[in-house]
Length: 101
Image (cartoon, rainbow, N blue to C red; front, side, top):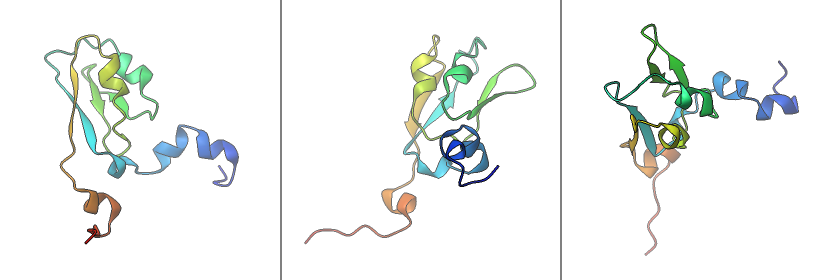
């Protein structure tokens, strides 16, 4: 696929091709005890950042998750919670923060 093709810029495959997990400030955390394996999180994830494991549970692919929270919002059992990523703005931007004096 040509990376200059407009389709590439808006398709889900662009997320798969790029590690975008470093963008988020919060991350989804799955509680397998609450999960009923309905797959709503998987079907609603706009980044295809959720996959099914060999036991039929769904796991977050953190390298591709942007932390939008749609999976947590759609989960009927509240098995997904959004938690702070634990990174600072400086780490996310790769530059030092400038304080106004």
